[in-house]
Length: 120
Length: 108
Image (spheres, each protein chain N blue to C red):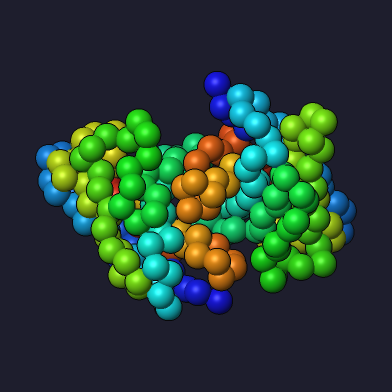
């Protein structure tokens, strides 16, 4: 079945970096994009950015520009999100989501989420 | 940036009630409006895309309408499993693809 499986929870110190993976299966990886969304504890959803799995084009939320990098490995159908210079307010659940042109770029399949905790 | 504003922020209702949640965009987004349901500890689930198209597998009691700047999500007859938080999101060409702040639907 179509699914996105993310890497496990991470605990990082302020100033460190984290790299979350998102492995796709059950569909042609390069026919869709991948968006990343995060949710701080008790808060709403925040769109972080998008990457085309076809050509690697990216668009990032302005507030994260310079700290975030999204990449894909088409040989393993895996997307990655790296966030650098971590701060305590980066503590959140991070989700990857398939982004489908045929659904007007709605996010139709979601990963299970990866908890990233930033604490000294 | 396009801002998305949902109302109400929270709502209490009973099983069988008809419920409407509204979402307003700060500028026209045509029909590039999506609705998601999120239950505690779970990833969001796509309910409605392109303002009014029901995602496969979603019960027909869910419906969406609107275009331009004003949109609604309606649940025709609330079921126990519908108590959750609902988010609208714009996917118009203008990034970022922002979400509304969410509407928490609780049991009365």
